[in-house]
Amino acid sequence: MSKTYTEHNFRARDHLTSEDHNSETRNWVSEFNGQLDAQQLPYTSFPSTAFTAGIVMDGVFDTKPDASRQVGVGQINATQAHYSVQSNINADTWSRAGATIMGPPAAAFVSTSGLWSSGINPLSQDIDDGVFMRIPTREGMLRGMAQIDVEYMFVEQVNTEGINGWYGADWRWQVFVFVDNLMVATSGPQPAGKRKSIYLPFSVPVPTKDNVEIDIRWAASFDDPWINNATQSLGDPGTVNFFNSHIYVRNQAR
Image (tube, rainbow, N blue to C red; front, side, top):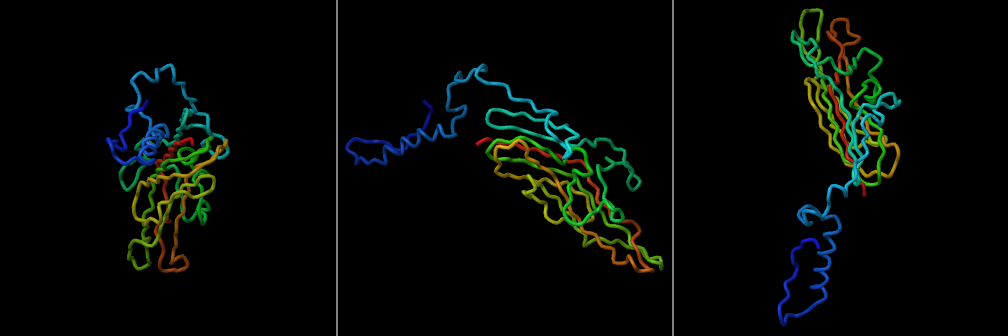
């Protein structure tokens, strides 16, 4: 029997109530209802032969929406499953402001190109690894974390009189985590003018399902008030850069 603490000490000639006995019974039963651990069981209760190996999911589940890549790692065990996918930018090969830093980015969205769409956009359309996974789940909870490194800097303001400055203090960017097209986490609007790593934890109930999709999406604001002004302009277009990213989830079966 598992080890429990006594709920009520019985003494001779005390008043006896049903609750005194019921509380002890509930205490014993609760140990079997999710509280059994290494401290509750004898050392030799479960020999290694009593455990079965998990199902290795490395390179099995999709990490691109079109099923063209399967580069994640994972394992399905008796009561839970783990999945992870990440990008791998690890070389200092990007020249920036006279220095060589880690890069280049996995994706760059420029305000003057057609790639920057309004609204919320899936990063999986432009980044191969670290922003999408499609996994099987069992009924229970899906808990996880998404991480991504984002840069959105100010740009130079130029006029015909030779006066320069910086513009972009009102620009904002935001990243989101979606599970089966339902938003479960967001960074909230972040100001431009910096590079920042965002970590987004999330927890959501899931059914038993063959394919559950988790992905990272983004949105950003940009405006050029001098776009039709002959005397003032922005020296460079606004650019949102995305570097390394990572999604990890744990499916805890009910």
